[in-house]
Image 1: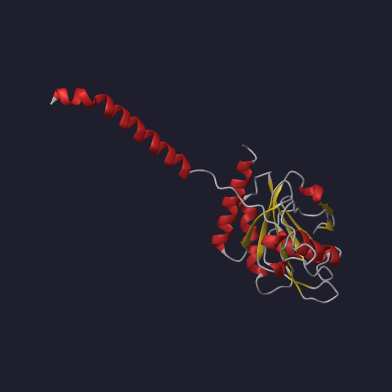
Image 2: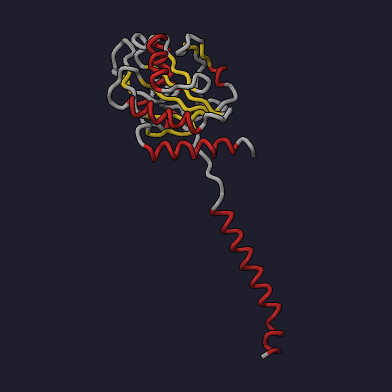
Length: 223
């Protein structure tokens, strides 16, 4: 019996080592970090994309903007320079999906409150009603932290163009006054101003996925 084990000891050692290598390889393959998509107009629901850019399949980024927040401060792309941020579209008098979206965005705010790398940006789709004063009142009611979360208003055409040509986030009413039908979408934007994810802002499980993917996106900058 001892001679048998001596004879096959080398074989057993080799097989043990090989098995260990295979197990380690599978382990690291299974735990490999997820890579987030970079969304382009060509692979997003056409109802949410202006027809002038529906053909674009690469290099899409959020355009420059200049809007006003709940404190009367001018908010531009430079406010979010070097930041990851979550964007959405809403209006303060909405009684359907907006209260749910705002509550869930407040939960995101709570999760990223001490994270200097992440911010939030909510655009009004009815800027003629959502004045600075109205946004401030809404911000106070909903627990908006001014350092983390900007509620913005401004020129209606600019917001319409941002919604349909940058964030790919709202439907058009098809009229000439730039009326928008906002959706429940939250968009995750990276430091290069690219869209990295879409999430249903009315669903808790989607908010959990958003928070997980924020961490994945942050980790990608550490590589």
